[in-house]
Image 1 (cartoon, helix red, strand yellow):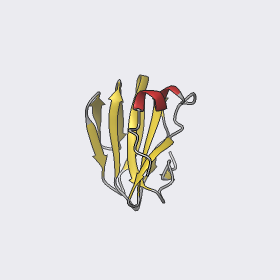
Image 2 (cartoon, rainbow, N blue to C red; image 1 turned 45 degrees about the vertical axis):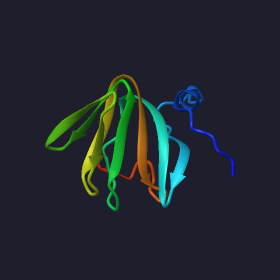
Image 3 (spheres, one colour; image 1 turned 90 degrees about the vertical axis):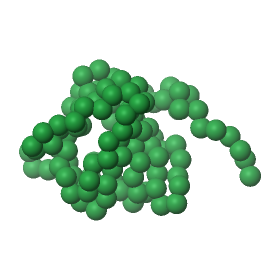
Length: 112
């Protein structure tokens, strides 16, 4: 067996595109992904699973149809399954996502 820690800074340095998650590890049926975000993402919903957003650098906002949550460096938020969201960040933000391996990144896109 090969024992080596995952160096998040090194993994983030390999990312060039925004909103394009990179798989960095798996545990049971869950995947850990890192992603750089900036600007607005589309409205979407994950019908079958909760989704964890953990901010490692910067600050992001998750809009809901009836409110929003701001997540800063060192904070995390778990979006319950079936809740429509629109993630965004004013400046580049580095986040880690945790979700089942079967989950599609954008969930089910909403109709506006």
